[in-house]
Length: 417
Image (cartoon, rainbow, N blue to C red; front, side, top):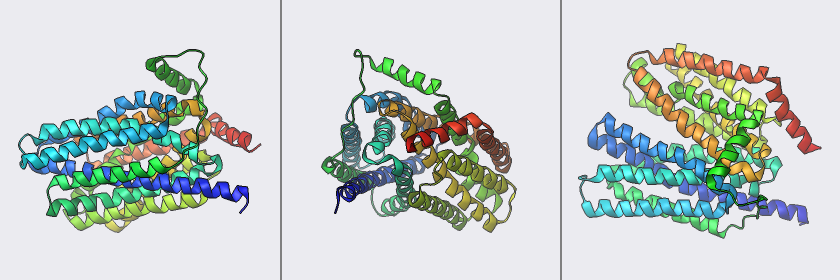
């Protein structure tokens, strides 16, 4: 085995270990998230409590992401990931012990809100560090493929975690699910501890600056970079516009095709199948060499399929369209993540990813807050059609923005030369 083959084997093993550890940890986190939502829903049947829980799960993460981006650029990202996972695991363990000790739901709801907020803070620290560390362990020409496989792992976890949470909750108390999350976190941390992560060159600074100063540097860098500014704005707007076709479909199915659990199950399954196939294809091929093409194609497919969903009244056609929507989402996310990893200087990457995390954790709840109540006033199909038209126009805008397209292509050509 020559040195080139040896180096390839080393980084591939490192990536497999990293993605496997994060996937195992994510599985535990997801089943806890599902269990908490179901527990609050079943115990209260209250929209107010569910709303408070949703805010506790998203707002702390959004706020913490801004600080976490600076930390991910300042400090050892491996340590940050381990510490954030450890804090989440310890908090979850304490809550499990609390629930075992109480043996009743009395006083559990306020504790759940507090625990959800702390877990959200940990997730806000965790996400920018993970996304910024991937380029440390993956050669640049393989970033899109690794992001594709990572998306596949996340799709699998998101599919099986509700099944696992439902099965466990049906036969045991909620604290058993909490203990599973602690166990998966320990496994994920253990794997990461054993991985040797290549060191990165620290950013040179003329003088020590405050966190707020570096945070403003991240804002300024992203705002002045026309390509990044448009990329993040486009991603945020897309997340907002895909809420009706992504999060209100269960309600649309119930109102259009009838109150049938099988319909809901098929809908979730085909969406998962589409995401899984897209992840495998992106992992195998890396998508287009110019990532903008992957992004634009994904948005166009998402927009056209969503537009057709708004007009269909035949369930089998509805499921086919949801399959294509499921395929489009990983393509868009992989393209956006890879573009940032390829174009942003390592010293700024954590802060840019923190802003991307803010786009998701901010625009998705905003979309739910607006479109959710509207669903009781306006037909969901009307909202889906309107948002689909705007998604198509958003993708056309990227096609027509020659500066945006050329900048992405020029960066790739420069790297190849």
